[in-house]
Length: 555
Ligand SMILES: NC(=O)c1ccc[n+]([C@@H]2O[C@H](COP(=O)([O-])OP(=O)(O)OC[C@H]3O[C@@H](n4cnc5c(N)ncnc54)[C@H](O)[C@@H]3O)[C@@H](O)[C@H]2O)c1
Image (cartoon, rainbow, N blue to C red; front, top):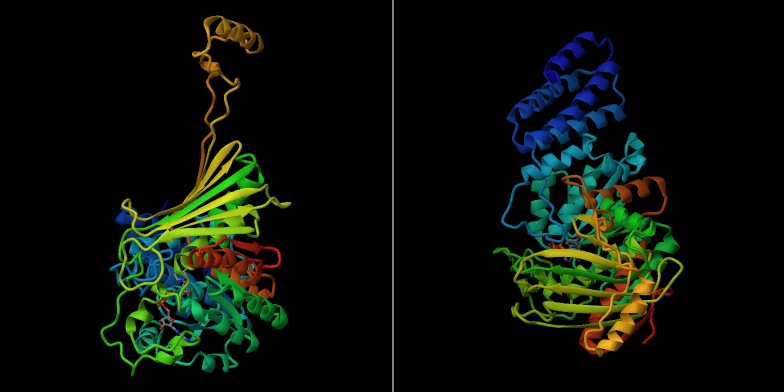
């Protein structure tokens, strides 16, 4: 490929109108993003080219007259993306799935960003296919103004992902800890409206949608308040803290007609989409069992998050944190490590099982189990928490028109000596599909004859048996042709692919188009319900009977 700088110079000379320049600039920026991705590996020569295009575009862009707002927004977004990939403009925090606290990293991961940038460069065509066209044509009227409620680890990731969708503007942030409001302004600018009281956000008529990333015990209340106030809602998983909260959220969404997306991003994942396609195509025959797990073995993985040294009743609205939870005196650990307490969180079931349920429901088309049983214990992280750190659930899924009857076994182990790993095994009559960062199918065809176990029979009986057997299955001399193919297949997502980004794209596209999201409250509750019943089963030491159709606890 020739030098992009030369190409750009030449193009600039030849271009007679801004239109040509826009086209050329767009192509160059896209190509440079691809180069930035390559440069992330080793070839600094590509980086130099991408950097040159960035600088050139930065100079040219303000000089172009006659650009439509749409064109300018698009070019600016591309330029920003390239700048971030090259580390020339401030980036955002690196989002680790379900690991909201920065694991010792304060700055963005450069490599991750290069790779994410490649998505925009068209390298990850399949990732692009998952986007909605609606986010590509933005007029000023299409701007979506969002507010974040709960600006901790995940809220920050949600706000970043949302703002990467073209036309989205973050205008307000609410949090009950002053430090997180200060950090929000440091991160996103002093123009942000900030408040400790989320109701002030809902009262603003200039806000279209809210991102809710508070501890679990606030989800249902804030989501229903927001929809009743006319806002669209992106609410983190689990949709609700208790099974009893679910029907109210579903009903409010129906009544108000607001868009509500629940934040289990796997439902938007191209990896899970691939797994769904393979399942529907019968790649593993008839499904009979699903196993899924999420193991960890470190303090942050086990939710021992940092507590800021300035935490005090002055800079934390303690009562507003507690909300409907029992009144207890100020104790920062309960806020900053809220997952450890049943009063605010949902244990490993609501935190991690719910991701496994939503992913599995998406792939199989299942809507939920009828029987739920869970067991486990607190084995290692005895830091005052009142939830188990080793947890297992068993679930019965009866046959529906979407799938045969199957059993599900889930496991979370925070004391797993092998470290972090997570995945699914879908077991079928003709193969096993494993879903983790990608999808793989392993098939071992059945033997063509049943074989025999006759050694303990008397000799004469053995001979009689063998004669009959060989008549039915005549002996054959094995040759190369008789070797059975193993038929293993593997599918990988493009490097840096982010299902979280796609989930936010899907939400914003729905806010614009008023078409359904991929994870509405019914889907969200059908994933949360059995996860939360796992807690009921564990703490009440009983089997729970659930009606997944009506989403009600039968006994
Ligand atoms: N989708 C995912 O992969 C994913 C990953 C991590 C967390 N989550 C979910 O996101 C939510 C937040 O988790 P987190 O790890 O970011 O927790 P966090 O503790 O880092 O952040 C929660 C924030 O909410 C604030 N808050 C508490 N009560 C509030 C209130 N009444 N109004 C406004 N702010 C309030 C807290 O001060 C805190 O800043 C949880 O529901 C969690 O399950 C989802």
